[in-house]
Image (tube, rainbow, N blue to C red; front, side, top):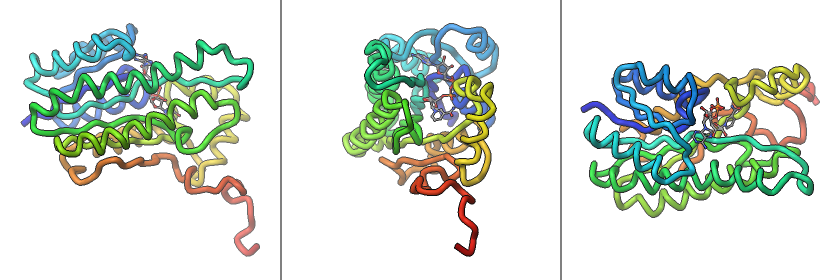
Length: 254
Ligand SMILES: NC(=O)c1ccc[n+]([C@@H]2O[C@H](COP(=O)([O-])OP(=O)(O)OC[C@H]3O[C@@H](n4cnc5c(N)ncnc54)[C@H](O)[C@@H]3O)[C@@H](O)[C@H]2O)c1
């Protein structure tokens, strides 16, 4: 049976790599994203349908599930990947930016879960996979708003995993570290920041969208059937570090 997935934020970066990997495995995909040329390009592919809109709108999430049902015969995996970054001073950042960060990164995910659960139940079970961040496990300077949102979505996933286990619906989280995507293009243009992030990664390089997508696709597949409530870093080892020393800072014999 062809597996059917919905991917939010599927027009770019990690979401787009996830769509490509799902298609390569023979699956069908409904993509939710904001209007863009990239989204319309996706609509030209076989086994891809698009819903143009904002994940903070319940109707957009519901429309994607209806499309998966009517055009592909049901839903197996809801991949809640759309997210927005935020950084700024803890006193000075306009509160509207904080509100929007929570709205997209947390409320958007909750709406996705709510839309998907009835369809996954009809299928007798299924997968929910959420893209959080290493920034939801620990904090970063000036990124408290993003840290708050991504930490919240991690615990939302754990709660949902408990509540949906009886329906054979698993809920898991991936936590990417620095990954080359549209979201991090700005960082790439500041070579010292790009390089300092690279050095902070024990594997000494940025990750690719495909490397994160590979873990998402596993968690969205039947192969992950006994994994739920898990938080999986895909971060080249960043979260393994206490942060007291940079990787390779101490000589091996000290
Ligand atoms: N790139 C990184 O280094 C990194 C690290 C950790 C976590 N993440 C997380 O990975 C996820 C994917 O990000 P990415 O790096 O691929 O970025 P990206 O900007 O390349 O892709 C994000 C996609 O989500 C869409 N999107 C954003 N807000 C939306 C909304 N309200 N409604 C519908 N679509 C929306 C965008 O249009 C875009 O297509 C995000 O949740 C992000 O927070 C990224």
